[in-house]
Every structure is written in structure tokens, then in C-alpha cells.
Length: 323
Image 1 (cartoon, rainbow, N blue to C red):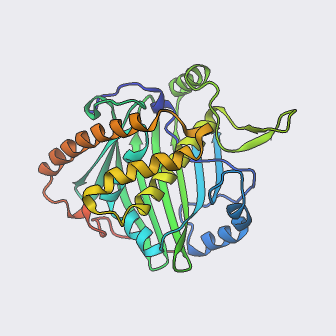
Image 2: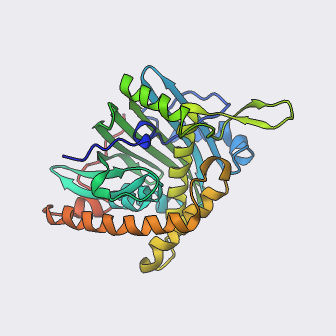
Image 3: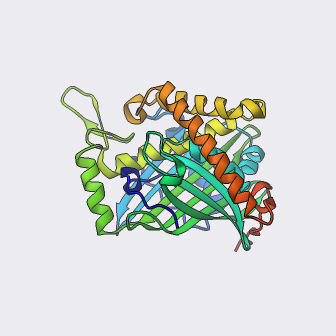
């Protein structure tokens, strides 16, 4: 059984963002055409917005469910993005760039690939001592111009449940892609209490990316509270995908160091929202966590009959047919 060690991150692990425009929510079966329609609608916002990066943000907290959505342009070819997303093991290079993800392992379980995220606090913690969240990895749809990946977990830390992560993408010409990223989970009264304490103490004064108005001096007022948490974590994951792709040209032996270096520099472009520690400290922590991850992955691999379903582009789960 995983160690269920309470941390503030466990009550605020939200991956997505918010925005001022209103779009119809994409359902789980949103397809190529729907994504193209959304892109056409929000293209002006992607090209010029307050975030300084080509993203459109949406988030909500209602009916005991926290949900976040981010649409963004990734300046990499669709075939490269698709290959990256549909290979489960790649997620264990993407996710741990986030401050709170201490490690990630992959392992075939019966007829699917399981990804386990080890979630802790921002400073270094041994991966064995933090909470483990096991996701089932699915390729829901894929073809030459559309990909839909999902991760799902029924049980989470501190009373949270029904975690759902969906990523969809389409090509934009030969060199760019349009990506949709959504994340949601349900929470209970205990989670809500923990969140309130965090926002009144450690999370006090922290803000997100959405601008809710102007003060008397004309300065922007940014969203805070739960939506601020959603937005900060969403951008961190978005930038993790970007830094993974940006460093694929680096020699494999140097790629990890280049990747975490790149991720930190990207986050520092949003210092107000995302700064938590200096670069030296972040890099040192991640190097230690990488060693933990390698050890845990070796153990997971020894307990598996085969790794093919997690390390290849075609895992055991078969793509679902469109309806």
C-alpha cells in the first residue's frame, strides 16, 4: 500500500487553467473537427493574450468537482507530439519536471499500462515516502491527424477521487500542433477544509494567470484561491510537455539535465505565478528525485513480465473506434 502522507499539494493537485472567453465544453468524444472549430474561434486570443504564451485558459470549481482545461499551440510537428503522447513511458519524463512530482513509474498491469505518479511537497522528499497515484493509461483514438490520450484513477489522496486527465491534439500545418488538455477530480468535505487552510496560510497571496479586473492604479488583478492553484499547476504541466519536446534533439545522456534546465527557465518567464525556489535548488532536487525514480522503475520492471506495452508507441490498450 502507498504511504498516504498529507501535503498541501495533495489538496491542490490541479492541472488546468482559466480564461475570460466562454467556449462550449468539449465532451470526452470531441473529435478532429471540433478541435479545428475551437482553434478558429480562439486563434486571436492565442496570438495575443496576457499570458505571453499561445494558450487559452478555462477552469471551474462546482458540484464537488474541480476541472481545468487548457488549449494551446505547440510549435512541434503533430507526428512528433502524437508519438510522444501515445508512448506511456514518455509521461514519466514529462510529469516529474513539475515541482511536486517526485517520480513516475510505468508497468504493464493485465491488459493496460499503469503510470504511477509519486506526489509530494516542493522540496526534496524521498519518493518512497510520498503519495502514489496510479493511473490507467488509454489511447482512446488515434489516426494521422488526431490523437486522444486519457489517464484515469478512481482513488486519490485526502478524500479525492475520480481523477480524469484527457489530452487531444490535431496538426496545424507541418510544424505546429493544437493541443487540448483537461483535468478533473472529485473532492469531499475533508479536502475542502484542507484547501481552505492552505489558502489561508501557505497559499496566501499566490495568484494565477487570469485577469479579473484592474485596481485603482490600473494594475491587473489576478485570480487567486482555488482557481489560482488550478492555473499554476496547469501551466507547469503545459510547459513540461513543451520542454520535453524542445530537448528531443539533445543526446539521450544529456537530455534529462537539459530538460529540467529548460523547464525552470520557461517557468521563470512567469515569475509572479510560478516562482517557488531558486534554480540551483530546483536542479539539485530533481537530480536526487531522478535517482529515486530510476530505482523505483527498476523494481517495477523486475516485477513485470514485459515492458513493451508501456515503452512502445502501441501499448496494450487498443484505440477506440469513432462513432
